[in-house]
Image 1 (tube, helix red, strand yellow):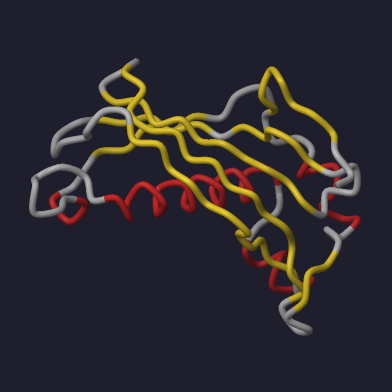
Image 2 (spheres, rainbow, N blue to C red; image 1 turned 90 degrees about the vertical axis):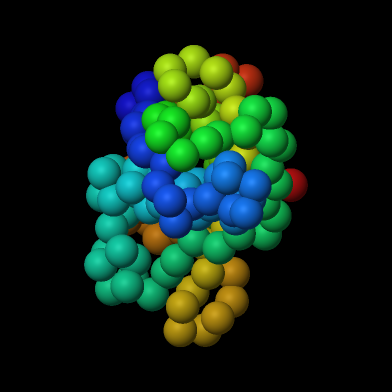
Length: 146
């Protein structure tokens, strides 16, 4: 997969008292995008449930560049920035563009996998490794084992 981008419309429920998109909605859109791409490549919620594994966030940061208003259409992408060779830890980034090409926010997350029974960090199941590595990678993607 070389690129993954989705369009979304801003709704009334997404706004804060200043009539622009509330800050927590940026994070919600990022989470929805990750689950969407996971599902599309085969790492579905059902498959994760059966293998007792789920993605967790270790860090999440959003840099706000332009306000997003009700009625704006946004597109959000996903890129793998770095990952361990075994896929156990990773960094992803989302870019939110409004009305076509205006970069409005950048979300960066550090994540890992958790065994949902033991409630501990775990390696990605072998069944998911090649699928996970199919997530679009940034042009400066790096492998890391730190």
